[in-house]
Length: 292
Image (cartoon, rainbow, N blue to C red):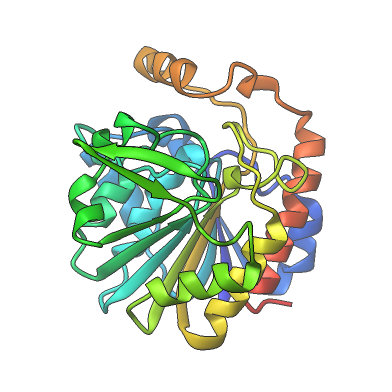
C-alpha cells in the first residue's frame, strides 16, 4: 500500500485530528462536499459517473476513507479502477447485496460488484443485523451465493431459507481466531485482494456509526487483515462507517433513511466523541495495512 486518500464527503474523517496528524506525510484529502447530499444512500447513474471521474486515483494502491457508511456504494468506483482479477474481502454488518432498481445504492452495491469481471469472489465477514435471516435471504443475491461468487461468513449464527432449503451460516471467528482466519484465507481464490471495512460491523466501543452496529472486535478485523497481507497482495482498501448525521435534500431519501436505520442515528453520540473513537479505529486499520 502506497498512500492514504480521504474523499471528504461529510467531514467525518477530516474531523479526526489525531489520525490526520499521525499519517500526514502519506495522506491526501480531496474535498467532495458539493456531492454530499446527492450521493448519500444512493445516486443516479449520471451523478455516479461524475463522482467516479472525480475519484480516479493515479496510484490505485491506496487506503481510501469515504466517510459514513451512507457512501459505501462508492467502493464500486474504486473497484472499477482495477483491471486484473481480485477478491473483495468485505467486513460489514450488512450484506449490501439487494438487487437494484438502484444500481448505485449503499444497499445494492455488492450485487453490482459481483458482476464486475475483475471481481472473482466476494467474501463477506461480520454480518449480524438480520438481513439474511429466514426468508429474507431470498431478497438478496441468491444467484451469486449459489455459484460461490459470494461467500457469507456471519459473525453470529444465521439460519436462513433458500426456497424450501434451510441453511446455517456462521464463521469460525468467534470460537477460534486462528480457525476463523484460516476459513477466510481458504475462501480467497486470487493472489490480489481488495479489502473494504464498514465500521458498523464493529462493537460500539471500537467505532461509532450512524447505523446499527455488530459485535465484531476491531482486534479481530485487524488480525484478519494482517493475515491476508502475509499470503496475498492487497491492491487497495477502503473504510466507511465514520459518523456523520444523515442529511438529505430528497424526501425519498429521508423516508428511506428513517425506515432503514436506528431512530437515534441523528444524535447517536457527540461528534467529538465519535471522532475520537473512529480516529483510533482508522489509525489501527492503517497500521494493519502496513502504514506506520
